Every structure is written in structure tokens, then in C-alpha cells.
Length: 191
Image (cartoon, rainbow, N blue to C red):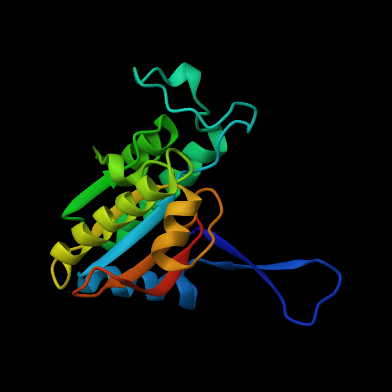
């Protein structure tokens, strides 16, 4: 576990951060939870090359028309995979948004992925459509409660809607899946 997590030291006003290994309490809490099963890891797609293009999902799956992962994003995903592999973490399901950056993140971080349109960025479509997609994921999570782990690779608004947590690119939230599909956040990972 060589990944580092940045933390702002309370009371510091100089803007400096302190680095500590992901093997810290936060990283250990995430790994411990995932080794128990019955948890979800919700990862925002890793870092992208730029934010120059509009939020567009190419209906033909042509990644040239979308924002794609940067080299840093690919490295982030690889670090998460190494951490999970080292701990022997397994996932019953790995689901991803249809956006190219999410699909690539999922492949690199988890080694596989199935596209689930319910993980499409909530900004796409109407509010009612977004709510229906969020409910679809909640229902899916309920079916996994008390069983194995589920990995979801999606977008910031989707993770916020499911966990009330704002995450940066490549950051992940680990949460216990409740019988009703709701999530109790236990840790965060920033590879």
C-alpha cells in the first residue's frame, strides 16, 4: 500500500498538506471493510486529460468524442488495482457508467466491468430520469446487501446522490450496503 492520501492539518493556515501512506487508518478501514464483504466501492472516474469538451456521451461509443483519461488517471487506476489485489479483495459485480473515461477506469482498477446505464452522469437527461437511475442503483445494491462486494465506477453527482460525499477524480468511497440498498460510508480511498 504505497498510495498516499493528502490531509490538511487542522489549524494550519499556510495551505500546506501532510502526506501519509494509504496504509493509514483510512486505507486500513477501507480494506478491512472490503475483506468482510457486503460493501460497495463507489469510484469517480480517474483524472481526465482536460475539461475542454462538453459532457457528451457518444451514442456510438466513439471515445474520440469524449473526455478521456490522462496518464495520471491511468496511473491512479493502476494504484487502486495494486492495493486491492495486494489485499486479495474480490468483487461480485463491477459496474460502470457508459462514458469512456469510466469504462477505462473500471477496466484498469478492477480488471473488468459491465456497463450499467443507471450509472450515466446525472446531468444527462431530466431530473426524473436521474432520480430513476439512482433508484435503480439503490435497488441493485439492496440485492447485494450482506453478500459480496460491488464496485461502481461513475461520476461525482451520482456518488453524491448515493452517499452525500463529494469526491475528486479517481477518489473512491467504501460503504456498507444496508438491506434497503442505502449506504453507510466507512472510508475513502484516494489512490
